[in-house]
Length: 560
Image (cartoon, rainbow, N blue to C red; front, side, top):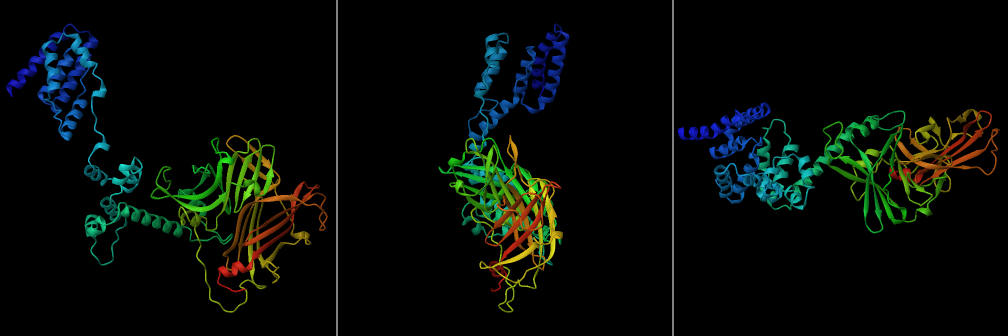
C-alpha cells in the first residue's frame, strides 16, 4: 500500500513543479484535471491511473478516454482475446510514453490513433441465448418493434418462451374463491411440451389474437348506446377520435409493386366520415391495377392518444378495380380534374393534363363503420351476422302498416346544404317489378312539403396544392330506420346532379330543374331540385326512397 502511494506522489510532483510556470488559464485547467483525477481514481487500477496522470501532466489538457479501454477490456472478456489493462499493446504505449515524455512523435502517434481501431460490441454478434435473455425483459410493444430490425431479431423476438410469459402476464385471470397465482407460476404451469412443440411464433400469434379480441370488446362496449335521433352509436365520433382508428389505401401496380398511404385528412360529419388521400408522389393511373381500402386500428389502446408508429392491424373494407377507370361513370369535372365514382362511396379525381391521380376520397357511413374497420382481416372484409327472427307467416315483414324514419344530409364537402329528419313514413303497400318498396318523403304536388336548401349545391374538392368546386356533383348521406329504430338501409356516396331536359309540371318555380338519382342492390333514392330565381336558392320539391324488400326480409329471416 505504501509503495502504491509513493508511486502516486512520484507522478504528481512533476505536475506541481510545472504549475509554477503555468498561466492562470492553465492552472484552472489543471485544477479541473485534478478534480477529474480524484473522481476517477476509484474506477481504474493503479496502472491506468498513472497513465491518466501523466497525460494531464503534459499540459495538453486532454484526458485519455477510459471508456474506450473499458470497451476493449469487455470485448476481450467476451471473445477471449485478452484485451485487458495488462495487454502488451497498452503496456508498451504507457511505458514508451513514460520513458521519453518529451518525444513529440510518440505523443503525436498516440493522439492520432484512429477510432476505427476500437472494436465496439454489436448486439447482432451476440449469441442467441444472450439476446433471448435480454428480449425476455421487454414488453410486448417493444418486442413487436424490435422484430422489425432484421430477420435474426424477428426470429429471436418470436421465441415461444418469451411470448408465453408475456401472454400469461397480460391475460391471467383469477377465479372467485380460488387462490391467485403469480405470473411466473402461471407461465410455469403451461405445459412445456406446448412451448417446445409449437412452431416459432405460435404464442406470439396467440397473444396478438387475444389482444385484438380485447380491443374489439372494448370498442363494442363503448358503441352500445344508440342515438334515438338517427339510430347510430351515440359515442361514434368520440370513439373515432380517441381510439386511434384510421384508414389506409394500398395502390397496387400492374407490376406487383404496392404503395401504402395513410389518410391525410379526416372529416367527421353527422352520420358519416369523409377520408382524403392526396400528395405529390401519387403513382400514375396507367400503372395501377387495383385499390384496396383498409381500416387501421392500433394493437394497444392503453393511452387515449395512441402513438402514430405503434403496432397496428388491417381490416379490409373494399377492393376496387382501377384498370378500367374510364369505363366508370364520370360524375363531374372542372378545368383541372375529372372525378369518377366507384361503388360503394369511393371518389377518384384525375388530372386532366396527364391523367394522374389528384386525390382519393372515401365516404364511410357510421353504421357498422367500427365493425367494418376492425372486425375484418387483411384479406376478407367484415360480414355482419344474420338477424334471424321467428317466422309467424309468409307475409312481408314490411307492409302497409310499417312506419319508417329517414335522416338525410346533402353536402358539398364541408358545407351542408340540407339536414333533414322525417318521421312516420308509411308505404302504400305496393311493390314495383324489381321488388322495391316506395316511400314518398316529399310529395311533388304538395308545395308545403318543399324544403329550401342552404347555399349552392356542388362538391368542393382539394389536393395538396389546388382546390375547386364542381356543381354537377354532391355527397348524400341517407339513414333509413324501421319502426324499431334500427338501420335498414344506409348510404354515403357522391351523387351526380343532372339538369332536367324538360321543365317541371308541378308548382311553378321560375328556374331550372335538376334531379339526383342513386340505386344499389339494397335501396335507392330520387330527388328533384328547382332553382328559384326570385329567392336565388334551391328547393327540394320531390324526394322518394326505395327499399329492396326481398333483400331486407331475407336478412331478417322473412319470406316475401
